[in-house]
Length: 471
Image (cartoon, rainbow, N blue to C red):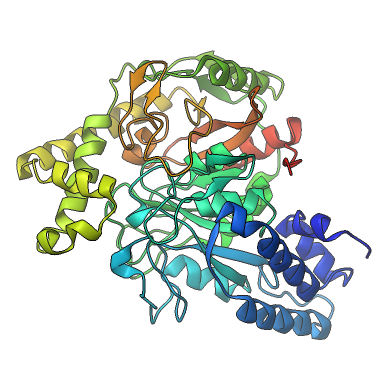
């Protein structure tokens, strides 16, 4: 099969599986093309911080042999020969895992975290580790070990965080599948800023170990260029694991869940959740995308529950978590932490145990209010983010419509659904006049990931996204 190296790198994982099975493409040629693309573009984007080319080629060669010897009808693992990347927060056995921190810059784990282990067991070809801020603390992926990741759509702008390296890699054709994690929006923020698909699955659907700094808020999810690829990754990663007490099984076939339309679904749309400032151009672009759900046969209604901004609860949980991590050695290591993270730790030290308990009570009440609201709707739509990509390496945008922002408080559409644990995806919603992507967030009912995926796939078919990146 004749195809340019660039075209090879922009094939989806589901397309690669088909070509591998009919022997029209080989895992080795695809892996080599992907590694060549990383070599050509990573110095500019800084998406990957550790590369594993020898391992990738060895795994691709093994997959190629498996496809060549497989008898008709034999089923190879779902990701055999498919290039994947792992976020640098997730441990990988024998592969440097810095967590974006000077404190872990030499750590080589002796085990794979559960999502990585499952991706590898399914035949995924490891390209390397993608950039993240220190311990995933902010919505940009800059750190003192490797520096910031740049947005593929505009150099000098952020790819988002904390899974910014993953998002930039996928958008730039440096692998179709990337693993991300999301404690306040860290899959959806970078996916939205880079114009790809990202899913924060239901809490606990994908196991996590070691535990996040904020276990009740943190989710592991797929970041891909197509919804089908996201479902494919979820199929591989989902399910209970003894190392994660929050993990659970669903029994759902997420690839089969994509089939069928969403005609007749009741869908709520909120441009601001009643409290969030939004850039006017972003608001208009995303509203137009949301409106297209009527073309899909949905009953669309502007609505949101009468709830205040839950940032106070999120802030207390996040800040006290980081204060807890460094409770016994902050005086010793504080000057080696990112300055912004150090400020969050100091902020967290000012809260009491009663403050934290009240935050968790607030979290439970917030979940209950959303559960009641969603009894009347199958899906909820919002903007993914209130702005397009700000400067690379900055901790936050600084202001939105003249209102000052905080380290994660600017992501007012994403963190509410870490509190509820509901599944939430972002799909590309169009670009603003400056050429930067916007995202539409699709939120589902409790543990109804299948409907979120089906809706995202229907919207993708109606409004396909192009990856005609600027040079």
